Amino acid sequence: MNNILGTMIWALGGLAGAVFALPFRKVKGWNYESYWLVYAIFGLILFPWALAIATVPDICGVLSKAPGGTLAMCAGFGALWGIGGLSWGLMIRYLGVGLGLAIGCGLCSATGTLIPPIVKGQAASLVADTSAIVTLASVAVSLLGIALVGLAGKSKEDELPEEAKKKSVAEFDFKKGMLVALVAGIASAGMNFGLQGAEWTTAEGVKTSLAAVAVDAGANPLWAGMPVLVVVLFGGFVVNTLWCLQQNAKNKSFNNYATLAKPATMGIVFWSGLAGVIWACQFACQKVGESFAGDIAYISFAIVMGSSVLFSSLIGIMLGEWKGTGAKTKGYLAAGLAVLAASIGIAVAAKMI
Image (cartoon, rainbow, N blue to C red; front, side, top):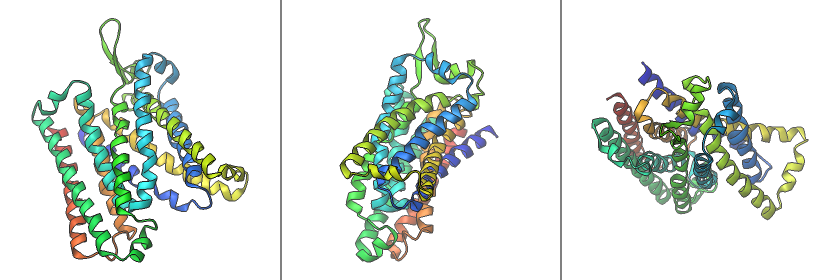
């Protein structure tokens, strides 16, 4: 039952990752960089800190017990995610919710799942036993699904007239979107590098982690991943804030914030903040679900991202992003979704072995 519950929590995180951008569709009248800063404040600072304070006794004391280098490394990986994360909004603008998140999340999943064990010097563990080999197979199958969804997107661009493309995705541009997706997907894997990296060896030669320190402080093991989450997201917040302010200066859009006192602007703050909270929920779910995973917790990222790919593609269909496409395009898309669903099933099987 714990295996099933953990997987369900990861899948719920994937759903959050798939739908987080939908509230942005309600935002009107502000520049992109202005409402993205509101998203960052809520999603990368306010919500994760509120969650950490509510679930981990003396959260600041827990963080103070970690070496400065470990915290800096986790925040640095968060900053790397921040660089990639800035591209997600642009990726959705050019490719749409379904295709954009499918490609971005897929690349993020493959990179984020495979690299952490390699960086830790545990590359051999990727093929150490049947469970590890099955996990690798799930990543390979996921990449095949991404390729099929990508072919569907290219086929869509080739067969639809410009007017039809713009109807569902106003700024649809496959080539530009794919370039942005590569940056977004690969750099965003820094999130998992940081979430899996809060470990160190004490002066007594004992290996420990922020999660272990949190449990020692009285935190329920379910919430022991919250301290590292706030550190990683802080790194991402710094990058996002610097970029937003630079864009405000470049586009002379600081005047957006001058309207904050107006009742109509509260809707912008609400929808942008809601997008940030929903987004943060996917990684909160990842860390909570890891409490059921034991030694193979690193596959949590693959399941969260894989679920997000699947759900985002289905949402894209519901939003009409594939309406009017031919049998060939729909065939590629259907095959891609089926393969992605299979990759999630394989990852779950690896967890059960």
